[in-house]
Amino acid sequence: MKLLDGKLASQAIKDDLKTKVEELKKLGNKIPHLAAVLVGNNGASETYVASKVKSCEEIGFKSTLIRLEDTISEAALLEVIHKLNYDNDVDGILVQLPLPKHISEEKVIDLIDAAKDVDGFHPVNIGKMVQGSETFVSATPYGILLLLQHYKIETKGKHAVVIGRSNIVGRPISILLSRNDDPGNCTVTLCHSHTKNLKEICLQADIIIAALGKPEFLKADMVKQDAVIIDVGITRITDASKKSGYAIKGDVDFENVSPKCSYITPVPGGVGPMTIAALLMNTYKANSLNHDL
Ligand code: NAD
Image 1 (tube, helix red, strand yellow):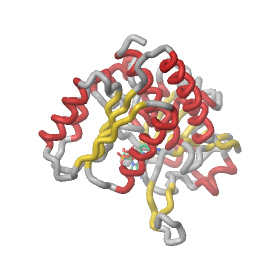
Image 2 (cartoon, rainbow, N blue to C red):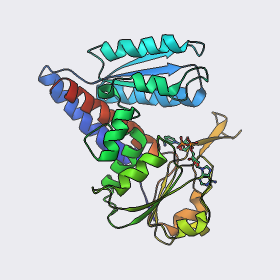
Image 3 (tube, rainbow, N blue to C red):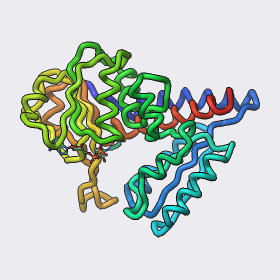
Protein backbone atom coordinates (compact mmCIF):
# COMPACT_ATOMS: atom_id res chain seq x y z
CA MET A 1 0.00 0.00 0.00
CA LYS A 2 1.22 3.45 -0.93
CA LEU A 3 -0.15 6.70 0.49
CA LEU A 4 -1.44 9.30 -1.93
CA ASP A 5 0.02 12.16 0.10
CA GLY A 6 -1.99 15.29 -0.63
CA LYS A 7 0.30 17.45 1.50
CA LEU A 8 3.32 16.48 -0.57
CA ALA A 9 1.57 16.74 -3.95
CA SER A 10 -0.06 20.07 -3.09
CA GLN A 11 3.28 21.46 -1.90
CA ALA A 12 4.82 20.65 -5.29
CA ILE A 13 1.99 22.59 -6.98
CA LYS A 14 2.35 25.50 -4.55
CA ASP A 15 6.12 25.65 -5.07
CA ASP A 16 5.57 25.81 -8.83
CA LEU A 17 2.95 28.57 -8.49
CA LYS A 18 5.25 30.51 -6.14
CA THR A 19 7.97 30.50 -8.81
CA LYS A 20 5.44 31.65 -11.40
CA VAL A 21 4.32 34.54 -9.17
CA GLU A 22 7.93 35.62 -8.71
CA GLU A 23 8.29 35.69 -12.51
CA LEU A 24 5.11 37.81 -12.82
CA LYS A 25 6.51 40.24 -10.25
CA LYS A 26 9.86 40.48 -12.05
CA LEU A 27 8.05 41.32 -15.29
CA GLY A 28 5.91 43.92 -13.48
CA ASN A 29 2.75 41.96 -14.32
CA LYS A 30 -0.34 41.68 -12.16
CA ILE A 31 -0.29 38.97 -9.51
CA PRO A 32 -3.32 36.73 -8.91
CA HIS A 33 -5.87 38.02 -6.41
CA LEU A 34 -8.44 35.79 -4.69
CA ALA A 35 -11.42 37.31 -2.89
CA ALA A 36 -13.00 34.95 -0.36
CA VAL A 37 -16.44 35.67 1.05
CA LEU A 38 -17.32 34.12 4.40
CA VAL A 39 -20.85 34.53 5.74
CA GLY A 40 -21.38 33.79 9.45
CA ASN A 41 -19.02 31.91 11.73
CA ASN A 42 -19.45 28.21 11.05
CA GLY A 43 -16.35 26.52 12.56
CA ALA A 44 -15.53 24.27 9.60
CA SER A 45 -16.06 27.09 7.07
CA GLU A 46 -13.78 29.37 9.11
CA THR A 47 -11.05 26.72 9.03
CA TYR A 48 -11.40 26.11 5.28
CA VAL A 49 -11.35 29.81 4.38
CA ALA A 50 -8.41 30.47 6.73
CA SER A 51 -6.32 27.78 5.05
CA LYS A 52 -7.22 29.06 1.58
CA VAL A 53 -6.16 32.61 2.51
CA LYS A 54 -2.99 31.32 4.21
CA SER A 55 -2.06 29.32 1.11
CA CYS A 56 -2.48 32.43 -1.05
CA GLU A 57 -0.09 34.30 1.24
CA GLU A 58 2.44 31.45 1.18
CA ILE A 59 2.79 31.58 -2.59
CA GLY A 60 2.59 35.35 -3.04
CA PHE A 61 -1.01 35.67 -4.30
CA LYS A 62 -2.99 38.64 -3.08
CA SER A 63 -6.07 37.67 -1.06
CA THR A 64 -8.98 39.54 0.44
CA LEU A 65 -11.22 37.99 3.07
CA ILE A 66 -14.67 39.52 3.22
CA ARG A 67 -16.43 38.54 6.44
CA LEU A 68 -20.16 39.10 6.63
CA GLU A 69 -22.69 38.60 9.43
CA ASP A 70 -25.00 35.60 9.03
CA THR A 71 -27.91 38.04 9.24
CA ILE A 72 -26.89 39.71 5.95
CA SER A 73 -29.77 39.84 3.47
CA GLU A 74 -29.59 37.98 0.19
CA ALA A 75 -29.78 41.29 -1.70
CA ALA A 76 -26.83 42.72 0.27
CA LEU A 77 -24.71 39.61 -0.40
CA LEU A 78 -25.56 39.77 -4.10
CA GLU A 79 -24.42 43.41 -4.08
CA VAL A 80 -21.05 42.32 -2.60
CA ILE A 81 -20.64 39.75 -5.41
CA HIS A 82 -21.66 42.32 -8.00
CA LYS A 83 -18.92 44.69 -6.82
CA LEU A 84 -16.31 41.93 -6.88
CA ASN A 85 -17.36 41.03 -10.44
CA TYR A 86 -16.58 44.60 -11.51
CA ASP A 87 -13.37 44.97 -9.48
CA ASN A 88 -10.60 44.60 -12.08
CA ASP A 89 -8.03 43.76 -9.45
CA VAL A 90 -9.96 40.66 -8.30
CA ASP A 91 -9.30 37.54 -10.41
CA GLY A 92 -11.08 34.86 -8.43
CA ILE A 93 -14.21 34.96 -6.28
CA LEU A 94 -14.94 32.25 -3.77
CA VAL A 95 -18.08 32.16 -1.64
CA GLN A 96 -17.65 29.62 1.14
CA LEU A 97 -20.63 27.27 1.33
CA PRO A 98 -22.95 26.51 3.03
CA LEU A 99 -24.74 29.86 3.22
CA PRO A 100 -27.43 30.68 5.81
CA LYS A 101 -30.83 29.18 4.94
CA HIS A 102 -32.44 32.51 3.99
CA ILE A 103 -29.93 32.98 1.12
CA SER A 104 -30.24 31.09 -2.16
CA GLU A 105 -26.88 29.49 -2.94
CA GLU A 106 -28.02 29.09 -6.52
CA LYS A 107 -28.65 32.83 -6.95
CA VAL A 108 -25.28 33.69 -5.42
CA ILE A 109 -23.33 31.21 -7.56
CA ASP A 110 -25.18 32.24 -10.70
CA LEU A 111 -24.22 35.87 -10.13
CA ILE A 112 -20.47 35.22 -9.87
CA ASP A 113 -18.77 36.20 -13.13
CA ALA A 114 -18.01 32.84 -14.81
CA ALA A 115 -14.52 34.18 -15.68
CA LYS A 116 -13.83 34.66 -11.94
CA ASP A 117 -15.58 31.48 -10.74
CA VAL A 118 -12.46 29.73 -9.43
CA ASP A 119 -14.63 27.25 -7.50
CA GLY A 120 -16.06 26.09 -10.84
CA PHE A 121 -19.67 26.03 -9.56
CA HIS A 122 -21.18 28.41 -12.14
CA PRO A 123 -23.53 26.67 -14.62
CA VAL A 124 -21.45 27.96 -17.54
CA ASN A 125 -18.31 26.34 -16.15
CA ILE A 126 -20.13 23.12 -15.27
CA GLY A 127 -21.53 23.02 -18.83
CA LYS A 128 -18.08 23.49 -20.31
CA MET A 129 -16.67 20.80 -18.03
CA VAL A 130 -19.36 18.36 -19.23
CA GLN A 131 -18.51 19.22 -22.86
CA GLY A 132 -14.81 18.73 -22.15
CA SER A 133 -14.01 22.38 -23.02
CA GLU A 134 -11.38 24.49 -21.27
CA THR A 135 -12.92 25.82 -18.02
CA PHE A 136 -12.57 26.13 -14.26
CA VAL A 137 -13.09 22.61 -12.94
CA SER A 138 -14.39 22.72 -9.37
CA ALA A 139 -11.65 22.51 -6.82
CA THR A 140 -12.21 19.12 -5.15
CA PRO A 141 -12.64 17.05 -8.36
CA TYR A 142 -9.78 18.98 -9.96
CA GLY A 143 -7.66 18.29 -6.87
CA ILE A 144 -8.41 14.57 -7.19
CA LEU A 145 -7.29 14.63 -10.85
CA LEU A 146 -4.09 16.47 -9.88
CA LEU A 147 -3.39 13.87 -7.19
CA LEU A 148 -3.90 10.98 -9.64
CA GLN A 149 -1.60 12.79 -12.08
CA HIS A 150 1.07 13.45 -9.45
CA TYR A 151 1.26 9.76 -8.55
CA LYS A 152 0.94 8.68 -12.22
CA ILE A 153 -2.04 6.44 -11.44
CA GLU A 154 -3.22 4.74 -14.63
CA THR A 155 -6.97 5.38 -15.07
CA LYS A 156 -7.49 4.35 -18.71
CA GLY A 157 -9.90 1.42 -19.02
CA LYS A 158 -10.34 1.16 -15.24
CA HIS A 159 -13.67 0.78 -13.49
CA ALA A 160 -14.14 3.78 -11.18
CA VAL A 161 -16.94 3.69 -8.60
CA VAL A 162 -17.97 7.06 -7.19
CA ILE A 163 -20.05 7.04 -4.00
CA GLY A 164 -22.04 10.28 -3.70
CA ARG A 165 -23.61 12.44 -6.43
CA SER A 166 -23.31 16.00 -5.06
CA ASN A 167 -22.83 18.86 -7.51
CA ILE A 168 -19.49 19.75 -5.93
CA VAL A 169 -17.79 16.33 -5.76
CA GLY A 170 -19.49 13.11 -6.83
CA ARG A 171 -21.22 14.16 -10.03
CA PRO A 172 -18.34 16.23 -11.49
CA ILE A 173 -15.64 13.65 -10.68
CA SER A 174 -17.80 10.93 -12.30
CA ILE A 175 -17.98 13.05 -15.48
CA LEU A 176 -14.28 13.94 -15.43
CA LEU A 177 -13.14 10.34 -14.99
CA SER A 178 -15.33 9.25 -17.90
CA ARG A 179 -13.89 11.86 -20.31
CA ASN A 180 -11.54 10.92 -23.11
CA ASP A 181 -8.59 12.47 -21.28
CA ASP A 182 -5.77 11.64 -18.92
CA PRO A 183 -6.69 11.15 -16.11
CA GLY A 184 -9.93 9.78 -17.49
CA ASN A 185 -11.13 7.07 -19.85
CA CYS A 186 -12.63 5.16 -16.94
CA THR A 187 -15.84 3.21 -16.99
CA VAL A 188 -17.69 5.00 -14.22
CA THR A 189 -20.46 3.84 -11.92
CA LEU A 190 -22.04 6.64 -9.90
CA CYS A 191 -23.63 5.40 -6.68
CA HIS A 192 -25.89 7.25 -4.26
CA SER A 193 -28.24 6.77 -1.34
CA HIS A 194 -30.69 4.73 -3.45
CA THR A 195 -28.09 2.42 -5.00
CA LYS A 196 -28.79 -1.26 -4.45
CA ASN A 197 -25.97 -3.79 -3.96
CA LEU A 198 -23.38 -1.09 -3.25
CA LYS A 199 -20.99 -3.65 -1.79
CA GLU A 200 -21.07 -5.81 -4.94
CA ILE A 201 -20.51 -2.74 -7.14
CA CYS A 202 -17.59 -1.53 -5.00
CA LEU A 203 -16.01 -5.00 -5.14
CA GLN A 204 -15.76 -4.59 -8.94
CA ALA A 205 -13.99 -1.23 -8.67
CA ASP A 206 -10.37 -0.59 -9.61
CA ILE A 207 -10.77 2.95 -8.24
CA ILE A 208 -13.22 4.06 -5.53
CA ILE A 209 -13.98 7.70 -4.82
CA ALA A 210 -15.83 7.89 -1.50
CA ALA A 211 -17.69 11.20 -1.17
CA LEU A 212 -20.76 10.65 0.94
CA GLY A 213 -19.90 12.25 4.29
CA LYS A 214 -20.40 9.13 6.44
CA PRO A 215 -17.39 8.40 8.64
CA GLU A 216 -15.65 5.07 7.97
CA PHE A 217 -18.49 3.93 5.69
CA LEU A 218 -16.29 2.03 3.21
CA LYS A 219 -15.20 -1.21 4.88
CA ALA A 220 -12.49 -3.69 3.92
CA ASP A 221 -15.04 -6.27 2.71
CA MET A 222 -16.29 -3.75 0.11
CA VAL A 223 -12.87 -3.31 -1.50
CA LYS A 224 -11.10 -5.44 -4.11
CA GLN A 225 -7.46 -6.34 -3.53
CA ASP A 226 -5.11 -3.61 -4.91
CA ALA A 227 -7.87 -1.05 -5.54
CA VAL A 228 -7.05 2.68 -5.52
CA ILE A 229 -9.04 4.49 -2.82
CA ILE A 230 -9.72 8.22 -2.77
CA ASP A 231 -11.37 9.36 0.44
CA VAL A 232 -13.08 12.74 0.08
CA GLY A 233 -15.05 12.65 3.33
CA ILE A 234 -14.41 15.11 6.12
CA THR A 235 -16.54 14.70 9.24
CA ARG A 236 -15.81 16.26 12.61
CA ILE A 237 -16.26 13.75 15.44
CA THR A 238 -16.23 14.89 19.07
CA ASP A 239 -12.95 13.80 20.66
CA ALA A 240 -12.10 15.07 24.13
CA SER A 241 -8.47 13.87 23.77
CA LYS A 242 -7.85 16.48 21.03
CA LYS A 243 -7.00 20.09 21.80
CA SER A 244 -9.63 21.22 19.28
CA GLY A 245 -12.24 18.93 20.89
CA TYR A 246 -12.81 17.02 17.66
CA ALA A 247 -11.14 14.54 15.31
CA ILE A 248 -11.49 14.49 11.53
CA LYS A 249 -12.77 11.26 9.99
CA GLY A 250 -12.92 10.26 6.34
CA ASP A 251 -15.50 8.06 4.61
CA VAL A 252 -13.11 5.09 4.56
CA ASP A 253 -12.26 2.69 7.38
CA PHE A 254 -8.58 3.49 6.77
CA GLU A 255 -7.10 1.04 9.28
CA ASN A 256 -8.75 -2.03 7.75
CA VAL A 257 -9.02 -0.91 4.11
CA SER A 258 -5.45 0.34 3.63
CA PRO A 259 -3.71 -3.08 3.80
CA LYS A 260 -5.80 -4.22 0.77
CA CYS A 261 -5.15 -1.19 -1.45
CA SER A 262 -2.48 -0.32 -3.94
CA TYR A 263 -2.95 3.40 -3.15
CA ILE A 264 -5.05 5.28 -0.61
CA THR A 265 -5.49 8.89 0.52
CA PRO A 266 -5.22 9.67 4.23
CA VAL A 267 -7.73 11.94 6.02
CA PRO A 268 -6.62 14.53 6.85
CA GLY A 269 -3.77 15.16 4.41
CA GLY A 270 -5.22 13.67 1.22
CA VAL A 271 -7.92 15.33 -0.86
CA GLY A 272 -8.24 18.37 1.46
CA PRO A 273 -4.86 19.99 0.62
CA MET A 274 -5.35 19.08 -3.06
CA THR A 275 -8.64 21.01 -3.09
CA ILE A 276 -6.73 24.12 -1.99
CA ALA A 277 -3.97 23.53 -4.56
CA ALA A 278 -6.64 23.24 -7.29
CA LEU A 279 -8.27 26.49 -6.17
CA LEU A 280 -4.88 28.22 -6.40
CA MET A 281 -4.33 26.76 -9.89
CA ASN A 282 -7.73 28.11 -10.95
CA THR A 283 -6.95 31.55 -9.50
CA TYR A 284 -3.62 31.66 -11.34
CA LYS A 285 -5.43 30.70 -14.55
CA ALA A 286 -8.13 33.37 -14.01
CA ASN A 287 -5.43 36.03 -13.62
CA SER A 288 -3.70 34.88 -16.82
CA LEU A 289 -6.93 34.72 -18.85
CA ASN A 290 -8.45 37.96 -17.56
CA HIS A 291 -5.29 39.99 -18.01
CA ASP A 292 -3.78 38.36 -21.11
CA LEU A 293 -0.59 37.38 -19.29
P1 NAD B 1 -23.48 15.74 0.10
O1 NAD B 1 -24.01 15.59 1.48
O2 NAD B 1 -23.91 16.91 -0.73
O3 NAD B 1 -23.81 14.43 -0.73
C1 NAD B 1 -23.64 13.17 -0.19
C2 NAD B 1 -23.95 12.15 -1.25
O4 NAD B 1 -23.74 10.86 -0.71
C3 NAD B 1 -25.38 12.20 -1.77
O5 NAD B 1 -25.35 12.27 -3.17
C4 NAD B 1 -26.01 10.88 -1.30
O6 NAD B 1 -26.87 10.31 -2.28
C5 NAD B 1 -24.78 10.00 -1.09
N1 NAD B 1 -25.03 9.04 -0.01
C6 NAD B 1 -25.41 9.29 1.26
N2 NAD B 1 -25.54 8.13 1.94
C7 NAD B 1 -25.20 7.14 1.10
C8 NAD B 1 -25.14 5.74 1.21
N3 NAD B 1 -25.43 5.12 2.36
N4 NAD B 1 -24.74 5.03 0.14
C9 NAD B 1 -24.43 5.64 -1.03
N5 NAD B 1 -24.47 6.97 -1.20
C10 NAD B 1 -24.87 7.71 -0.15
O7 NAD B 1 -21.92 15.64 0.24
P2 NAD B 1 -20.66 16.41 -0.44
O8 NAD B 1 -20.85 17.87 -0.32
O9 NAD B 1 -20.34 15.81 -1.75
O10 NAD B 1 -19.54 15.95 0.60
C11 NAD B 1 -19.25 14.61 0.86
C12 NAD B 1 -18.14 14.53 1.87
O11 NAD B 1 -16.98 15.13 1.33
C13 NAD B 1 -18.42 15.31 3.16
O12 NAD B 1 -17.84 14.64 4.24
C14 NAD B 1 -17.72 16.63 2.93
O13 NAD B 1 -17.33 17.26 4.14
C15 NAD B 1 -16.52 16.17 2.15
N6 NAD B 1 -15.90 17.18 1.31
C16 NAD B 1 -14.56 17.26 1.34
C17 NAD B 1 -13.89 18.15 0.53
C18 NAD B 1 -12.40 18.19 0.58
O14 NAD B 1 -11.81 19.17 0.14
N7 NAD B 1 -11.75 17.14 1.03
C19 NAD B 1 -14.60 18.99 -0.32
C20 NAD B 1 -15.99 18.86 -0.37
C21 NAD B 1 -16.63 17.94 0.45
